[in-house]
Picture 1 (cartoon, rainbow, N blue to C red):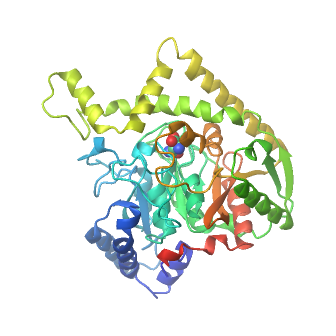
Picture 2 (cartoon, rainbow, N blue to C red):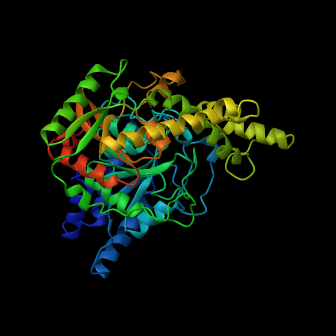
Picture 3 (cartoon, helix red, strand yellow):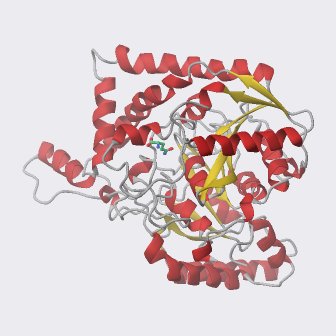
Length: 487
Ligand code: GLN
C-alpha cells in the first residue's frame, strides 16, 4: 500500500477500507524507518500529523461528501510558510523564524482535507540542483543512496520515491520540480507562471518561481494542481482570468492520435549522456506508435538560456534576500558593534556559500554601470527565448525533451563546481524564462537510475501536457517501478 497513488488511496478511504489515521501512521512509520538515511524530511511532528488525520476522519464521519483530498498525506518543501512548525527554507538564517500565516497553497490543501506530513529538505533558498546546499545536510536518492536526488526540491522527490509520503509539493524557479522528479522516477508539474499563488512561498526569483506537485503518477499531479490553482488577491502575479481546466478529465486521454510533438534539435546535443538521449528517443518512437507525429523543430536561443537565467535569478534573489538583515527574521549575530556590523555579521553567519554567491552575482549585475551590460541584456535574451517558443507552437501542439542531460550524479561530485552544477539545468531553465507549463515523467532507466522526459506546452495548456503524459503513462510501466531497498 505505501506505493499507492493518491487516486488509489482516495478510493480506499472512500470505501472505508482504511482511515486517515491508518494512512498517517503507515507513512510516519516509514519516515521513522528511513529518514535517518535519506534525510528527506527536516521537520516532522508526529502528534500534529495524527491530530490532523483524526480531524479528517471526524470530518468524513460528519459529512456526506468528503473534501477533494480528504485524509491524504501530503509533504511540503520547507519553502512554504506554515503556521504549524518551523519554516526555514533550509537556511540557518531562518532559524527560529515563525511564519505568521500559511502560504495560500497550504490553506488550499488544508481546506481540501489534506493531512500535512511535514517539511522536506531542499537546497538553501531553493538555490541548487542537488539538495546539497541545505543547512540540514544533503538528501539522498532512494534509487542509489550515494547519489543526489536532484534539487532544489530533492527532499520532496526522495520522500515520494521512497513512499515516505504518497505525494509532495515543490517549487520550480529553473527546474526544481522537474529535475528532481526526473532523477527520482516521478511525475513533476510546473504550471504556467501565474496559475498558482506565490503568497507565503519564500521568494527566490519572483518572476520565475512557481509551485507544483511531485507525485507517483500523472493523475495525482492533476488532483493536486486542481486544488492549488486559482486566483489569489494576495498575490498580484496570480492571474485573475486564467483559463480554467478540467484537470482530472484531461488525464483520461489514452492515445496521441494527431498530436504534433516538436523535437527541438537544441535539446539533443553533444555532451549529454548518450544513454539518456537514446532513452528519450525511444520514448518518442513509442509516442509515434501511439499516433503522434514527431516534428523536428528549432529553439535557436536555447544555448543562451542558462546564462540569462544565472543573471536574472540571482538579480531577483539579491533583492528578495535583502530582507534577511538580522533585524526582522531569524538569525542575528551576537553583540553587534553597530548597525553595519549587525547586518554584515548576521548575513555572513546565516547564509551558506551558494546563497552568498548568488547575492554577489545579482548585486553586481544590477549595479550601476553593469546593469545594461548584464541585467538588461539578459532580459532581452529572455524575450527571444519566449519568442522561440511562440514560433514553435505555431507548428506543434507540444514539445518533448529530456528533463536532465544526465541521471542522478554522486553526492559531492559537482558540489565544488558551481558552473558544472548550473549547466545541469540546461533543459529546464528556458521554460521558466518563458513562463510556460511543463511536466516531467519517467520514461526509462539508465544503469538502474530513472530518466525523465519533459513535456512543454503553450501557456495555460496544462490539459494538453496532462493528456499526452497520461497517454504515454498508460502505455508504459516506468512509473510503477520503485527502488528495491524501500519496498
Ligand atoms: N537549479 C536552479 C538554480 O539553482 C533552479 C532552482 C530552482 O528551480 N529553485 O537556480
